[in-house]
Amino acid sequence: MITKIKRYYLFFGPEEYLKTKRIKSLISAVVEKGYEDFDCNYFEGRGLDATVLVNAASSPPSGSPLRVVVLRNLDKVTPRGLNLIERFIDSIPDYTTLIMTSEKIDRRKKIFKTLYKDEKACVRFNLPTPRKAVEFIAESAKQLNISIEPEAINYLVETIGPDVGRLDQELTKLALYVGPKATIRKDDVALLCGAGSIGTVFDLPQKIVSGDAKGSLVLLNSLLSAKQSEGRILFRIKDYFLKLNTVKALDMSAWVLRKKYGMLEKTAVNICQTAKRLSEICIINCLHHTYQCEISLKSAGLKKDIVLFDLISRLVLEVKEE
Image 1 (tube, helix red, strand yellow):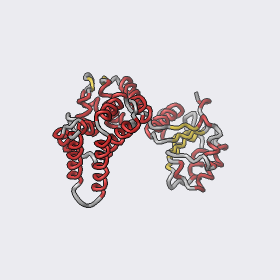
Image 2 (spheres, one colour):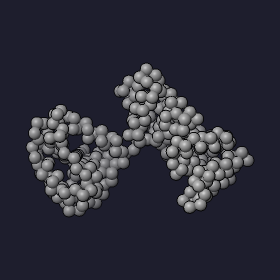
Image 3 (cartoon, helix red, strand yellow):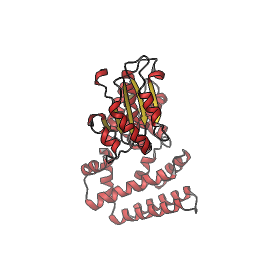
């Protein structure tokens, strides 16, 4: 096992949770239990004194097969520090593995050219698609012996997004909420992760396009009471109508929509059915109201909640006039 560990790794990309999980897995594999404080060192890229990192990486482990040195945010290291680390790469001792993380990489820089001499040591961690996020939740629930309905998994991903770190946290909260012997259902997700049993921010655009003025306004009020940000609420509404506009303009099928945006099948079908039902003028008018609301939210005029209530009233009116 130890002989398979490389002298260095570069984990990069926007998915922080999976990067952290991979680092913990490596540490667990090569650092003896009880020696974590002695044989594992952590450094942050911003403000790093690279000589301290090199000295730590050059020190033999105290009681483990390997010393692990973790450097987070390599892209934040100063040019001078990057130069020192780049020269150290080929001199990393056999008893050390250096793990570096970075959100973005610039392959033109010398440090990344050097690291990419071993492409297998450089691993990209992208945000998963909604489908992959659903698979992640299902697998996590299985490992934790948590019972959760497939509909609840889809609803959780649609509500939270494909951030597996947040999804994992929400799954843990839901498991504690329903108890060890109960099954997590869609209503549990809405109650714990949204604005109560009436739904989440994801449900708001669907209530609007169904012409449910009362339901839309009640849900908006609950979302605001639950401290959902006005910006997030507006983003969800705007994103929904932008997708409606794309489907309408290109006569896009649900299958193509899923492939283009990586969304779940049920969501894609809903958007396509709604786009067929609403006219092009209606969708464009709704987008116009949304952009006006966005400008109003950024100004110092009306209170933000009033602006959103006005927007939803206008949108529902447009839909009802179809």
